[in-house]
Length: 175
Image (cartoon, rainbow, N blue to C red):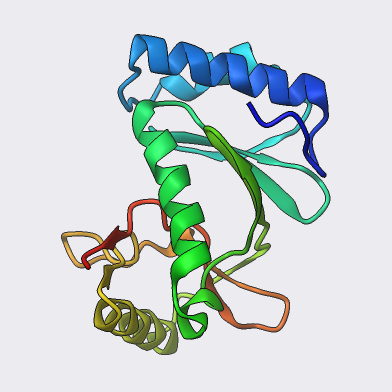
């Protein structure tokens, strides 16, 4: 367990560690209702800003979010985001929400407040970004769904109005 954090106190880290240990022992698989169980067990003092089948997202109220795995697959998603952020070329990294800190089963990332506008121009930007990632041998799975719909909630705009991907835990490195 990581025993220090610039953003989380020891009590929060212990709660996260206990939750991650439990989910790994019980091998929790992704399901819609698991976030409620995780939230009750974690008892973190932050508001929830998002959740899925794999992770729970808290607003740290300091311009950052905390993503906690709620299933074994959520652990994998967190590792993928950390690995990608650390290893992609800078021309792609600027399009990924910044990972500030991480530990086993959790990560802290820059919060993106502004939603990506649903315009024709944005569609073109998403498709171009998808092409750039694929050219670098990364399949950006969560940008566009299998049925060709853009996943708007996985993207946003930073303070300078630049396109940023918030959720890239399902991206696949094909090298």
